[in-house]
Amino acid sequence: MTGIILASASPRREQLLRQVGCDFRVEASQAEENNAAALPPAELVRRHALAKAQAVAAKAPAGEIVIGADTIVTLTGKVYGKPTDAPAAIEMLQELSGQTHSVWSGVAVVVADRSFTAAVETQVTLARLTPDQIRRYVATGEPLDKAGAYAVQGRGALFVERLEGCYFNVVGLPLQTLSQLLAQAGVELL
Image 1 (cartoon, rainbow, N blue to C red):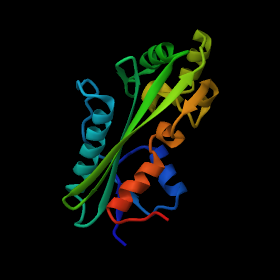
Image 2 (image 1 turned 60 degrees about the vertical axis):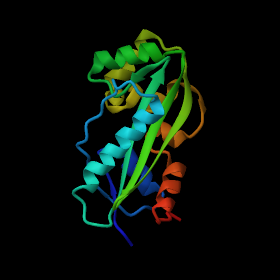
Image 3 (image 1 turned 90 degrees about the horizontal axis):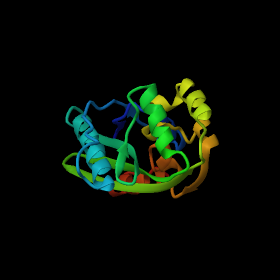
Image 4 (image 1 turned 180 degrees about the horizontal axis):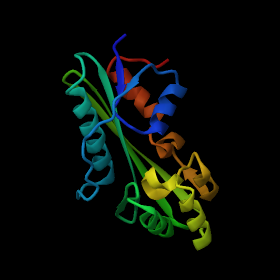
């Protein structure tokens, strides 16, 4: 079987792929993300995911299949990536508190000169958070490497009132969509 490479340093993406029995290796991509680009969210995450996959594919042995992914949060046109520090995480959570927002993930599969991409949107509603809840949560360190400054699969789950769409998308890798893209590239996960 052709080798699969996950072009991501995300432990959550790695865990999700292992959970479904995928045999792969991890090679973090050094591709730059530009969340300030004036693009629709679906196009932005698709481009980021493709850039990550292509950067790793350029150095990979011929025939290897490379998976790239990118996740952002949007609210009323504003894009939220990963917070740069604790004050940025606090600000993000204050803005998302009590709001329904979109979590977008782009997924790309690259093999040889072919690429397959998709974007997935999930709607998430957070409870209204008190300043003390936000402060305590940020002090755990959990929000600091998560788009939107919360982890739906961690303590951040305590704040989620409603989720409409793919749960795994909010974690960072929409597995059903990835499975479809891999099938297009000739790989069946099951």
